[in-house]
Amino acid sequence: VQLQASGGGLVQPGGSLRLSCAASTFTGDAYTIAWFRQAPGKEREGVAALRSGDGKTRYVDSVKGRFTISRDRAKNTAYLQMNSLQPEDTALYYCATTSGNKIYSDFFRPGAYPYWGQGTLVTVSS
Image 1 (cartoon, rainbow, N blue to C red):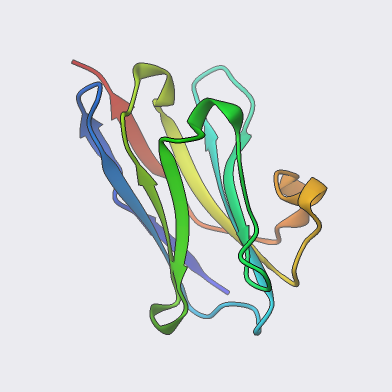
Image 2: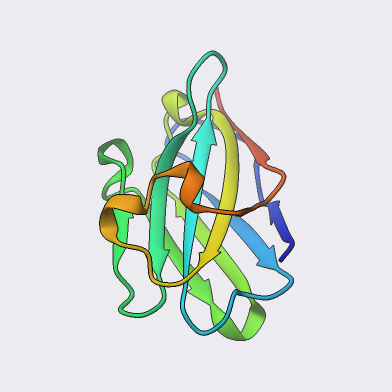
């Protein structure tokens, strides 16, 4: 499985971006997708995740109500819609996927995902 993340860029505070993660294939009918981010000097953190079986999602508290994860199975693509962006959202954003419907507590565990995209940079600044 190969993942290609795109859609990052420079945006002013309050603006929006939509990140895309194109997969060569999703790992079967059951899979879990996640977006992580890593800001300079900080650890990688889970931002949003979704499992295919029941559509269950999880968001880190700091993005709840602003970010939305989704996927288009026909296009083998996952998305992260980011609204009301703030400077603290500045980071390198990665998409990741794995086979199976992961349990909720594994959604933000990087080791649960064997497949990663290369990262796309989001900079929020005026």
